[in-house]
Length: 478
Image (cartoon, rainbow, N blue to C red; front, side, top):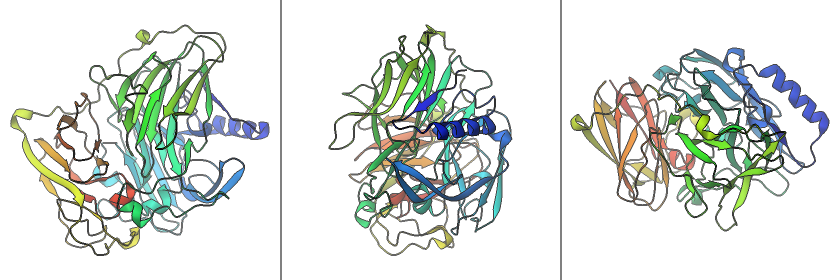
């Protein structure tokens, strides 16, 4: 596979040499097909410790932003590479003065490894180490982030992509990881407050610096006429992106890690793809055949014209590949729901009828409640005597009816399980498996799942300000 190279106006050649050296030291055959974020990828087999630490980075122009959080003092969190069915061992050491815990978003792994404080583990204090070890049953695109002090750590950079490779390469020449992130900065590059009370009560507090892999509008080089697997991940704390490609020789092949069943229309300017916080989409792209031609991933932001978030540029002689040469992605081993024998549970998402300050223990609080599930706000991570929202029995099929009674969009994420959206009162839902359902204004969606992973599984909105102000619960599988 061909390794893509990123270029930026004003590149420092010495820094490029240093990054290339780091790529060589930290990458392996597993990671060689995608340099990923800033050329920084790590195979799970090479991980000694993932060290949560303060970081600095030039997010905008030459201005250095201090007060960031990453796994390196001067680089974004690396892309972590694993392989379907192979053990991953990830020791995480916290050197921050805050508590933390690491969640592996979308992975159907044992409950004790899910990284939710108080629900599956105690949070890690300063200089404490917790070793996560699991075998991913599914291939696909996933990501990782803290589930403790989430606004303080996620909004300041601690969100990274995970790639779980199929046993066999489906036939791509290269791949490109795209981590979509906003940051909220002053003109001097320093951080503005990560959240506001007004934002938390509405759609969330949006960033004003829009990045891909911590870079603004980067260009990545790929072989002309080659086949590229574009892995797009929304790790933002708030924003739902409206995306489309400038090229038509492409197709969506996976959603939230799972291969697409059937055809999903390629998004265009008039009907963009909505990708909410926590969601991922894999797109197979045939690069242009002439050197220098580009494929743009285009975003529409409120009040702004369409613009390219990232550009793929064709280089060298054409490889003259065709999308029809790709092998279909093998289905992940997710149990099929038995809708004829399903039990129904209903959940209402909306504003809370009561206020009060949540008791979040070591894992922080925004200081107010605005949101609720079934009209009851989450009392806090460390609250006592909090029972599950629902109890599901192992092996049984359930239909969950999700009703959004608010005028705001909510990406609802369920840990540890995969589900299939089956119907909506507003739109036709594509046939796919997922872990995060984007609920639109006033939408009612039914999803179906098989309760096949025992434990207490967090169930919450992935607009982090909503999550931290009441829109959180958990579901128990026994």
